[in-house]
Length: 282
Image 1 (cartoon, rainbow, N blue to C red):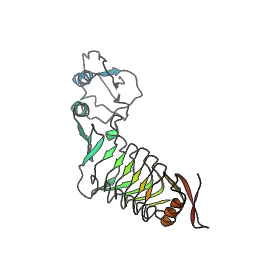
Image 2 (image 1 turned 45 degrees about the horizontal axis):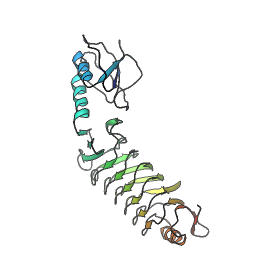
Image 3 (image 1 turned 45 degrees about the vertical axis):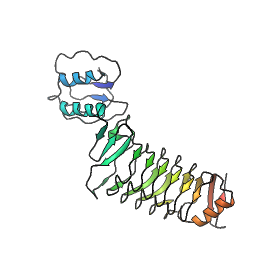
């Protein structure tokens, strides 16, 4: 029994394989992103490993790493590897991804399919393919549930997730722009963290019920009813932001006025229920 790790390298030669290896289980690392691999001993051939070798793959007997995807036979593995290496577009069971722009460009599901949202921080779990953009309307007729996981997302286009029903807190550390009604009718609750976001369009999170704090330290635009049903008690915002009616949900009118009275200063504002005002902290 031999444990095999396939590690993508550049300018590395693979020793010639003379006969079919006997592999019960093995490990494959591609591009730094890892998942488990089981290899069918009856279907793995020397030709399969030889094909990988032509792509600049190093074969090692070290154990402990894992691979990019589950593989049932060599033909599937070779096809998947070719798609990843040579095609601009790759896809999973849900969507199509453009490797050149790091964008999800097409939904492959029927309208109003309901399913749990996958971890789309990286497409197909491959480190080389972060999901940074979603085109407008892409998932607007799909009913996603569960937690929203897209930690590399930079822009969520208009109506991108209309009709979805996400839950839990939301953390988008790389996101800079959220389009109008992008998450309309979702059911986010708890905290919201958008440390790099500068623009949140109208109705983006309407019907969510965020509360703990709103962290928008560089945001300069919040459209009408962007957080229509939320109830924040602490807001961190950028300087000279444009704020529109009901933009933060509860106490929006007071926030807009108190923000104006402070000269639209960047910083943190805390809601004081006794005075009915937002108190500027720093």
